Image 1: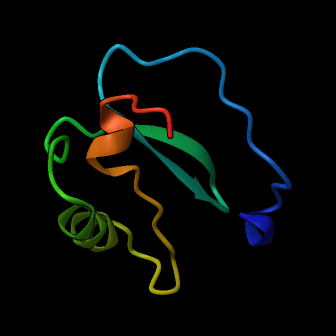
Image 2: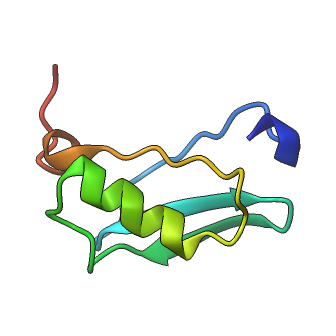
Amino acid sequence: MKKCGYDAIVIHGASKNPVFLEISDEGVKFHSAEDIWGKDTYETDDICKKRIVIPEAQVMVIGSVGENLVRL
């Protein structure tokens, strides 16, 4: 994120549908995550890494706990 020129990202509100956030040199984009919703963190990580064309990109996922809005 820092390499793309962002020190922090603040997101207000909530999406009605599952989305994932892509942060790159081209900007910040939201993409549909409906097809990966409900998958475990390992599978989600693999799917996201295949969609990203930048080899050194990193992925952060929330898993089923985040999907179910569990507060730990």
